[in-house]
Amino acid sequence: MPDAPGLELIRGEIERDCPGAVLATSFDRNQAALIVDPARNLDVLRWLKEQPGQRYTFLSSLHAADYLPAQPRFAVHYELINRDRVERIRVKAMLDERRPAGPVSDTSPAPTGAGPASSPPAGGELPEIDSCVELFPTAEAQEREVFDFFGIVFRGHPNLTRILMPDDYVGWPQRRDFPIGGEPVTFTYSEARYD
Amino acid sequence: MTEQVVDRDREIMTVNVGPHHPATHGVLRLVVDLEGEMVRELRPVIGYVHTGIEKSCESQSYWKVIPFVERMDYVSYFFQMEAFCGAVERLVDLEIPPRAKYLRTIFLELNRIHSHLVWLGTTALDLGAISMLWYCFRERDKILDLFEMATGQRMHTRYFQVGGVIEDIPLGFEAKCRAFAEEMPIRVGQYEDLLDRNEVFLSRTKGVGIVPRERLLELGVTGPLLRAAGEPWDLRKATPYLAYPEVEFKIPVGTVGDNYDRYRVRVAEMVESSRIVAQCLDALPDGPHIADDRKYVLPPRSELSTSMESLIHHFKLVTEGFRVEPGEVYYAIENPRGELGCFVVADGSAKPARVHYRDPSFVNLQAFRDMAVGTYVADMIASLGMLDPILGGVDR
Image (tube, rainbow over all chains, first blue to last red; front, side, top):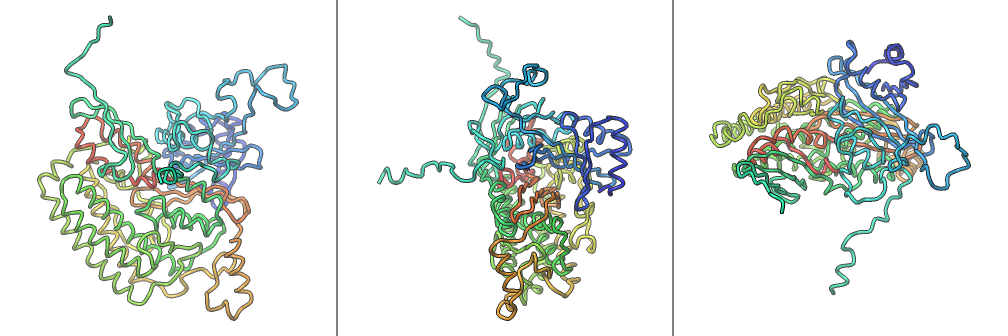
């Protein structure tokens, strides 16, 4: 792990090469994390991977979490490791839940039509982030898993479909507001029928 | 009428393998495009044993999560427990006593041998060596006997707790375990005698399923698969945890990265694991087997009838569990298949807000396409065995 000053040094260097990409840092329980702008996650990941002297070349895990009451609700975590120095760093991109654009939304007038018009209509209600499969091919299955369970869309992923849940499943089961239970159990009443 | 061009020399047939088939080592389905007997394209379909364990963990208090996570990778359950307990110990900053570290290391290494024995038996079975299965399961049963002796259960033991292990080892365990650790390298030698000069086994494994080291690293492959390709990457050495820095062992590596090297690496690991078990038994320190922090650890049973405080702590821990300050931790250990990471998010309550496992089988399975495309169907089955995925861990 880089220690707390080391993490600030890394942040400073990224700030020099990609200004504004890192929003904050956190050093908690001896684990270093860079909180990055979700629109620029690839800049930071590429910098960490390719910068001489850093070389965080191995993506050991990619996962997401839902911090429901908090406002940027979702986070995608990239656990990177530098295998020469054996240092781990976490890159964390916080994502807002994007509201559906069309139906009865809150009172926002928004006739100016600046930003939201560019969002695709179909996936418009899901949070989006750039896929890092080009940088780390290992992320292919893990990004599909995050999509499957949290409904986070990875732009540019070669085959973003459900991986563990059935293809026709509706809902994003790992979200915190997705209820547990209530899943109809197949074949439950078949015994009674054939008595 | 449309003219259909049929190229008789290049006819692709799509075949479905599994999901229920002994050679898929679990509930794995493979959609394979074949040209004659050559595999041209391959798509693993997973999710058949997805049971939502990660979701279920979010509604359990921390100590009740342990039996859930054990059931993910059902062959290496101690590793799941260690990953979760270690992550929670890092969240609450709890140091475990030295004896607990050694006991955990002993059980982890016994579990590693157990897992490799299951792998060796079933994979040799795929390659036609039926007797290997019986020999391997004979030794596996001895390990299960040891687990039963110390924990009361043969599988899914719930032995590791946040703060240490639930019970000290019983009388007689040490002698039995030491006898096993001495016997195991001899048994491994016997397995090698059976396989290493077996013409069929050699021709089925040598030079088959080679994936270059750089490609494996890109795909995030860890564990024996990566070490067989010549990369000496083992978290037990790289990020020492438990008693691993205090024992001496080697990391077996391969040279070519074919299926034969994968076999050699795992077999050598069984010998190294027996050495670790023997060293841990020699150096087993005295003292408590679980931490003494009453906020997180159940008080000893004997105190309940004499101490009011103990009774209160016991009641609070059993009814509500302990609360954990908000934070998140990723803790990775070396599982028999590679890097097993546990990511836990705490939100201040007595239940984790998120438990995620980075399961090595799930990530390693991505390398299967590289291993099998361009080889024969029979070699694809051999490569799958050598990949050693546990589908309970893949699907969670």
